[in-house]
Image (cartoon, rainbow, N blue to C red; front, side, top):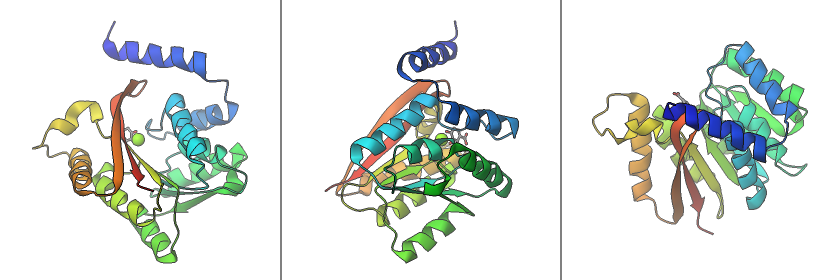
Length: 222
Ligand code: DHB
Ligand code: MG
């Protein structure tokens, strides 16, 4: 059996053991696939990991950078208290329409604000407004991974947790000479992390239905 097949089967086994049927997220996954969105959403176990972090940190205001079909946005919004708020960004108009429909269908639309446009523009606007976030999930284009982290840190408070997706990319991120803009973007984020002070940091390498990848975790020291 191919190792990737083991990852997939193990993911499915853990899902069966640890997760419960989730018609809300399943409907989003199905509709996103039907609408032809790229299969880059987080997995069910990863969605629960994000929700778990939101619950244990007591986050009330969440920023998601990169919405895609709204799968992770709904998973995270659902973990918030009733007065919680989640802002998510999507650059592609058609994708945003699919996401908005998925979000409305989910029943959590009242606490999700989907803003359409390049994430950096949305973030600049929010920063100018003085918005602060307790939890940030960075999962848009990897070219701007470092820029998103930098910007997220300006909208953080002591205790804010930031999670950055896709920092391993099957180990291709090891290649310092790579001409791939996504790899370069991730490496820029990691180089930037080396310069940070007052931020607790770690990373998790992950395997599963989406192959071999990883997430970086940041927490602004309290
Ligand atoms: C890609 C992007 C993602 O956010 C992800 O989780 C997996 C892959 C990509 O652009 O290749
Ligand atoms: Mg991702």
